[in-house]
Image 1: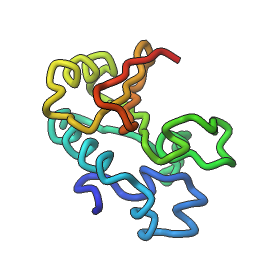
Image 2: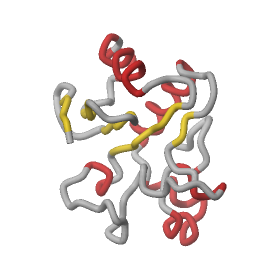
Image 3: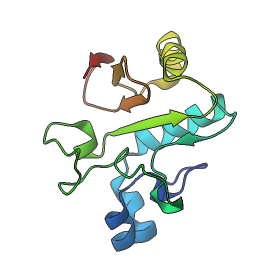
Length: 135
């Protein structure tokens, strides 16, 4: 499954994209793909950025994190291809988090969300209900 709105280089790090190209889709959890597409459809003004290194930006590790990432952590959901950190140009992370929490039935796959950060961290960890945490 591929995203309706995002290219694979926006979701995986540079080396993974360079090695696998379009085949890197197989490493992205379909629950995350469905979720980011729903988020983009609802929060449709401006940009919704995960990785932007392809265009010369500084975000490379906001999707999948491999061991060569400076942010790699063995227990991180990013390290298991289960998480994205997202920045919206027209919405605050708090605004998006609040909408998700008020509409959990619309975002059934989100099972982890980080609080008190300026980006939206969502993950699809193996939990029965959503886990809210602070870094």
